[in-house]
Image (tube, rainbow, N blue to C red; front, side, top):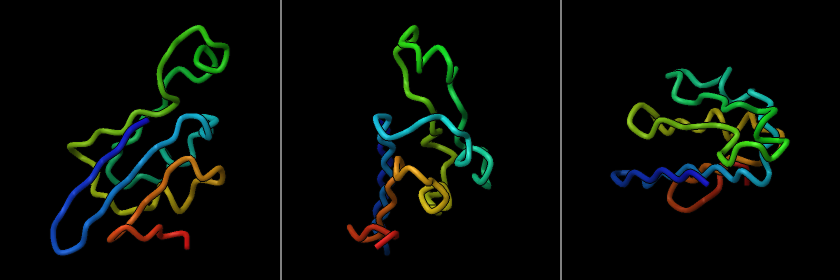
Length: 87
């Protein structure tokens, strides 16, 4: 599970839940900063590699929430001031 939090005028947090993720790559395609990269999906799915389906670069992520909005599996949760943007 990956989690990024930034506090300021708005408190923003992004959490990736690997148990819900299937490694489809939609989030990697929509990320405007290229901060999300797919891992080796097939070896992960087969249990040959123990890692998350996606890797999020915490330093370059803008916390814009596009990935969470696009994820059809709700594997990425984005909150602003503790409110989920999908609600």
